[in-house]
Length: 316
Image 1 (cartoon, one colour):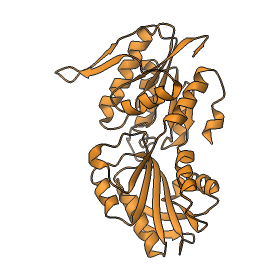
Image 2 (cartoon, one colour):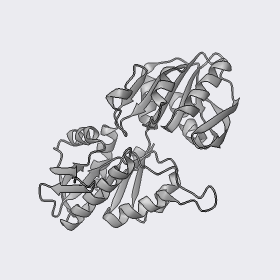
Image 3 (cartoon, one colour):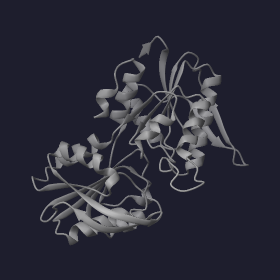
Image 4 (tube, one colour):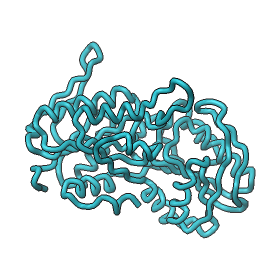
């Protein structure tokens, strides 16, 4: 591949090298030569093993746990590429950490999602490619182009291919995810329901009511990310209590922190479908968690960005 800005090169830090390699394979190229390690005092060391002068560099790095290390790796790598005279640098961030700190929920709160956007820009990013931001307005925190892909098409395809039948209801776990649920329901030609809940404190949710008909239906809970899985499991239990025949769940980002996997294993959820924006370690792999690849979608977006083509058709 080549265009006015020179060749394309894909590099990765340590957050998700498997996904980066699959993206490169989808593009028919090999990963760039870069070594990202840590000094004895904890400082991050980046060594770029090939010339990037005049090239279009795409740095694939999810800012998942360990969030701060992965974020610093991304920033330092981009600084290295900028100083090495790369033509254009695109930060490919499949999972954007700190996205849930997107506003001042109470007095004296930081807006960390905006701070991270500033850091990424100052470090040298010319544009950002990401997936399913927790809050869509984060795109506006950047003063550079942001291409925001949706994982819903990947997840919906899984259930379309599974052929669950006509008695499907897509369930939003809260009011904030209704647009996502409606989009998903349109893909499956299904009805929607909403779980009305209140959250007394962070990572603690109390199910209040279910709006919509779920009795005798196969319910699919749809969210952008699953963290401790408390909301997800409580929602699944409430759906069963209201007469749902089966409960499935899906989300683009499987954060799965704390005891999330144990909760899911002991819940009524028949299958949880996530993507590989965050790598799933061996210790968290159980039979009812399935992972779908985002590599083809991200590779197509990278190709379109590189060739100066429209990316908007991938947003649906």
